[in-house]
Image 1 (tube, protein in one colour):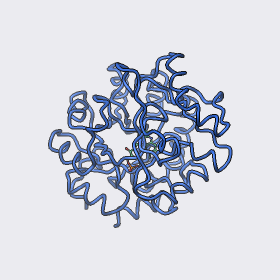
Image 2 (cartoon, rainbow, N blue to C red; image 1 turned 45 degrees about the horizontal axis):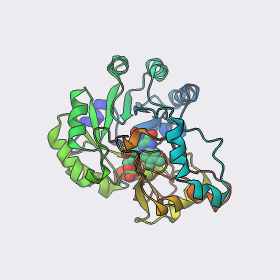
Image 3 (tube, helix red, strand yellow; image 1 turned 90 degrees about the vertical axis):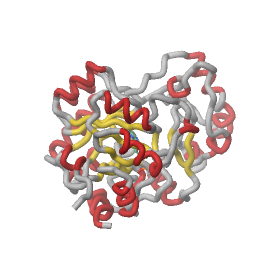
Image 4 (cartoon, rainbow, N blue to C red; image 1 turned 30 degrees about the vertical axis):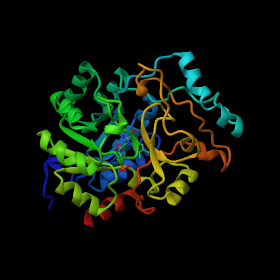
Length: 345
Ligand SMILES: Cc1cc2nc3c(=O)[nH]c(=O)nc-3n(C[C@H](O)[C@H](O)[C@H](O)COP(=O)(O)O)c2cc1C
């Protein structure tokens, strides 16, 4: 049925649809629903402790015997540089004062990179697919993961990154266009201005590598899936499209914002974590979309996300980072029927 069945064969799934890992927005309920429907459900572990990840993986293994994906960040964690952190924080003083917000309970950076302990979990639960964002972990960790038999995926935002990932042994590459919601997985460059859209990136990556390519960014229905296949993709990874499904773990405010946001109301910003991500434009972003860090300090590594994000009432919530892509989500459908809808279209 699919013009390119390389990815479904690689992973042993029925539909070439990956529910994107979404740290902080989707847990086991979503993964089980999508995998049961024949797609590939993904558990994002970047914001989970080892114990939380274990609990989610146990629930997933109880809920489905279909292949699943466990996803990890492998960024350089920000160094504990108090002066630099304070400098970053000062840039937001006006917002903290205006909104009487308090950041004492907000950790400098809750996003942890893949490490030995998470790797132990992978060895224990052996998810059929393991995907990474921001490159790959070091060779020893990667070797331990591949030894479990897991297929390895990682995100490329350019042809150079795609070639690098293939050289390191990735089984399939996610070509993440500029439209994509969430953090840009870029790791060989920090220059956001050179990043291209899904339509331009996917065919270039498909021409440059031999492994199957997954298209990600701005895809939310059958038309997008068809286009991705025409451009050379063997699967699609959709994130924002799943955010309005009941299984998404998002707040009512977040849900409302998704409903109300228009196509031109998202933008790439680094103000929330120091790394570029596509988010719904809020008050802080209107003030400044990007913060330049000290010369010589890579933007993506210097800060830990101390921008105000406290939710106390409807007014303050507009400072919450809401990372999404520009396409509308599946309208409140359960994730299972969302997979069916997208593929039958
Ligand atoms: C809320 C949200 C959180 C995300 N978190 C992750 C993550 O933890 N790991 C990851 O590899 N990608 C993450 N992404 C990026 C997705 O993998 C994917 O590239 C993106 O959703 C595709 O664009 P779309 O949202 O337009 O479908 C996230 C995306 C969103 C919208």
